[in-house]
Image (cartoon, rainbow, N blue to C red):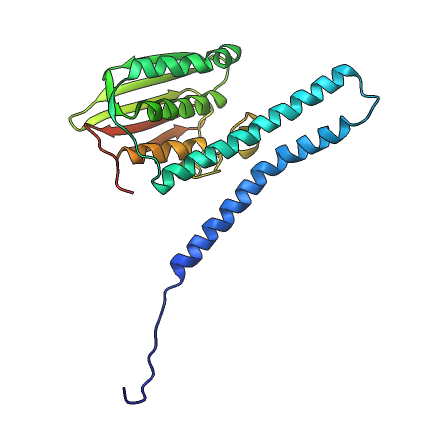
Length: 248
């Protein structure tokens, strides 16, 4: 070179975006854990008082246990999400009977559905789906549990399937409160809630739908949502025929 200067330009936009995502993630995790930690600490401190009646002690202990379970679930779901996102988990597709998977999930939530007065139904056209059996159950559980959280007395949750030439559509519908249109595009993001206070109060972690999206994408499928306020929500998942794991 003849004494010329070399100018190198670097686009820092992707790095800044990653930093913003990391900051948001840390802030969200901190926020989700702060409330149960504060509750556990407060009640644990109160339990040290010698003159608390036995029935109050039992109530405080139940509250501590409940919030400990909530923190454990957040941590477990974060670990699940991390394994899926990092590619350390891959599906093992096989022919899975949807009716069997639906029956298993409805059995897990039957007591809650009964107490809320919500009916659980299936409309199965395509009897089998090519998917990882454990992942399919987790997808269904997360969707049904989320629907149950937002469906009141007299409501209905339905699991449906419909076959196409390219694969199978798995549909979970509810007649619940619905999602405002401005929130709908973001419901599959980590920690995103259309109604943060209500969802957290009902036991939601804000991670269930994000896990659904990543599990579906690991099957080379896709998931979409339709909703109208006061008319319920429909989550539609497409599983391609003979799906092989998506490349990470």
